[in-house]
Image 1 (cartoon, rainbow, N blue to C red):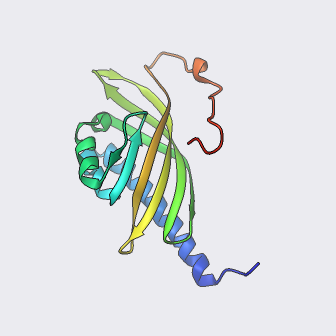
Image 2 (cartoon, rainbow, N blue to C red):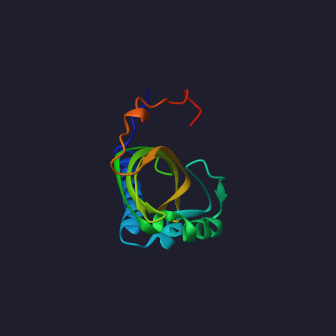
Image 3 (cartoon, rainbow, N blue to C red):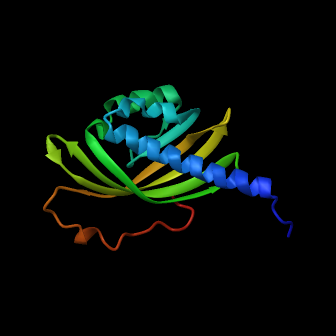
Length: 157
C-alpha cells in the first residue's frame, strides 16, 4: 500500500476542518435568526431532502424552501460530526438536537443529517443534505416509545 504524502494528509485534515466549519455555520445561521441565508452554503446544483418532504434541487429552489421552512423559529445543536473526504469531495453525518417552535408550540426534535460536500473555487459547500427526523415531541412527552430506533438496512439512507 502506497504511503500518503504529507501534503495530501494536510489537505485532508484542512478539508475536514473546513467541512466541520460549514456544518457549524449552517447552525449558526439558524441560531442567529438568519435561516433565509442558508442557501448560501449550498452548491448551485445541490439537493436537500428534509424529514420525508420531497427533494429540492438547485440553490434557488433551496433558497425558496428555507424562506418558508420552520427553521426560522428554531435553535439547533449538532453532535458527533463525522467527515470523510479526499480533499475535493466528501461525505459525513451529524446528529441534530433541535428546539423548533411550530404552530405556537415548543418542540424537541432529534435527527440525523447525512451530507455530501463539494469544494468549488476553494470553498466547501453542501452538495446534498438529507435530514432524517428520529422523533419530534412536545416538552413533557417522553421519548421512550421512540427507542430503540429502527435503523434502516445498510445502503437505505
